[in-house]
Amino acid sequence: MLLLLFSCGGSASSVKEGEKSQSAGSGAPAVMEAAVIVPIFDADSAYQFIDRQVAFGPRVPGTAGHKACAEYLVSKFQSYGAEVVTQDVELKAYNGDILPSRNIIAQFQPDKKNRVMLFAHWDTRPWADSDPDESNHYKPLPGANDGGSGVGVLLEIARHLSSVPTEIGVDIILFDAEDYGIHEKDTEQYYSNSTSWALGSQYWAMNPHKTGYSARFGILLDIVGAPGSRFLYEGYSLKYADRVVDKVWRCASSLGYSDYFVREVGGMITDDHYYVNSMRGIPSINIINCDPGSPNGFGPYHHTMKDDMEWIDKASLKAVGQTVLTVVYNEK
Ligand SMILES: [Zn+2]
Image: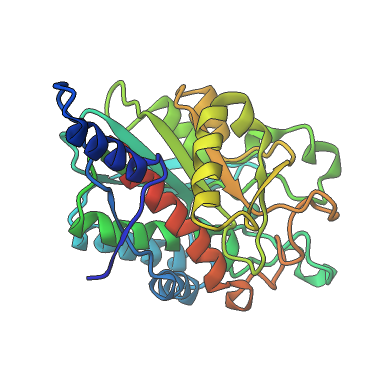
């Protein structure tokens, strides 16, 4: 296996310092930090994980594609040695639809007290309500970026967690029913009723898989696969977890990904991390590609039938995946 030696926290210089103090013979014990071994994130592998999800068809709660994909995701995590628990629950959408939903929680080294939580939503939107063609506005979209990409990156991370253990415990949580929020055409409610989104994470925040569950911090990956993705400082991430934002953006920069992790403030996005922060109190950030200048605030594929594999770029997956892996492997 190929391994990348890299630290975000400057432990390379710590090693140097340690060596110096040793040779100086000051009498004080030398502090020598070992270089952190971070696996190399394989973007081809992440791409395949996205393609596999898209092949199930739209993952809208209640559909056959949704059910089959859930089984695939659970078995994949199990094959990587995770202890998997699921939360199967019927959630009520804003329009009264009952959504048979499943949150999937993959625990790595579950006995470790210090934990980091990585999360994404795995369901896809039932309506392409931003599509330029109005006849698509009530059709389900493919969800390669919106749904598939965050999960694909997390599956690739899971593959490494199984073979190269981290110092801390890691939980990968895939939330369901994130994207069943108000249809854009219900304009009166669209901007006012924010609680119609992220139903799976709202449920989990009130009913975590372990009583009193907490984590040091959380990182949400949503819409991370588009070519030339730009990840801006998202508003709720800054409000609740500015130190985590700083840690992740610094790490990205040290790896050479400043073109992706841009140091500009973007908008506030109601997404799963909002509820993990506000209802569960775990400082969490959102890595999400947005474009504040566009009509719906995201890329041209967003909530359209174009959200397919054509819009998935391996370089973007690599930037996100390598950054998150490096952050996680540097936690002590
Ligand atoms: Zn969406």
